[in-house]
Image 1 (cartoon, protein in one colour):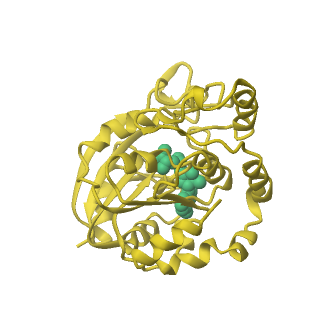
Image 2: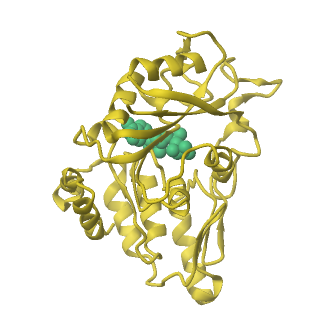
Length: 319
Ligand SMILES: C[S@@+](CC[C@H](N)C(=O)[O-])C[C@H]1O[C@@H](n2cnc3c(N)ncnc32)[C@H](O)[C@@H]1O
C-alpha cells in the first residue's frame, strides 16, 4: 500500500488533515481483519506492469501477453487468496475475476443521471475494492479517494493497483466516522450500500455533508422498502441474511432524512429490484448470495419474510 503519491494530492487539494491516517504508525494500529496477513499477500505479488488499462464495464488491467504462463498461473492462485471478490468484474492479465456483483449494471443505471465528474475530487464512502472508484476515474475525476473499514476489500484494491501506473485513486482503510471532519473539500461524495448498515443514518448523512464543498453533490444509494414518509423497516435480527442492517427507509423517508440534514435539490434518479443476474454466487465468491437470501417459494420476500431487496439512487446537493 504505497500512500506516498497520495500526499502530493492531499497537499494540492487542501486535504492534509487526512495525512495522519496513512502514516505507518496509524496503519500499524489496525488490528482487525488480518491487516498484517493482507500486507504480506500484497508484497508477494509479481513485479509486472499492465501495458494497457481500461476502466469500463470490466476493469481490465493488462493483457495476457504481459506475463508468461507460469506467472499467470501463480497470479491466479494469489488472486484467489483474496476470495471472496464481491465487487467487480475485473480482468487481470487475462484472468477473469467474476465477482458476486456485476457492478457495471449499477453504474449504467446511475452514471448518465449524475452530474459530470470531469476534473473533480471525489470521495467514495464504503468503496469496497474500488470498482466504482475506477469507473469514477473513467468519468473524468482528477482524484478519487475511497474509504472502507473492511481491510480485506481495501487489500483487494491495492492488489489491483499494484499492477497500474499509479492512477490518481487511493483506498484508505478507514470508516467515514474515522475521518477528521469537517473536510468540505470534495466536489462529489458517493455513499452506496452503506446507509442501512449504520445504526445512526442521520449521523451518516451529516458526516457525508461535512465532506462536501458548499454546492457539492451527494450520490446516495440505499436499500428501500415501500412505505409512507416517516416509515422505515428495522429488521428484528437479519435482513436478507445480513446481520448488520439497522434502518431500511421508504424513499419518502430517505428524502425526508436528506431534507432534515439540510441537503437541497434531492432527486430520485433510479429505482431497481436486485436481480439474481446482478448478484450471484460465482467461482470467485463461492459462498451464499442473494439466491440463498430469498424465499424459495416467493421471490418477492427474503427468507425472513421481509420485502426482497430493492435499491434507490438519490442525488442531492449541499447548499
Ligand atoms: C454493501 S457494501 C457496498 C460497496 C459499494 N459501495 C457498492 O455500492 O457496491 C458496503 C460497504 O460499506 C463499508 N462500510 C460499512 N460501514 C462503513 C462506514 N462506517 N464507513 C465507510 N464504509 C463503511 C463496508 O465495509 C462495505 O465495503
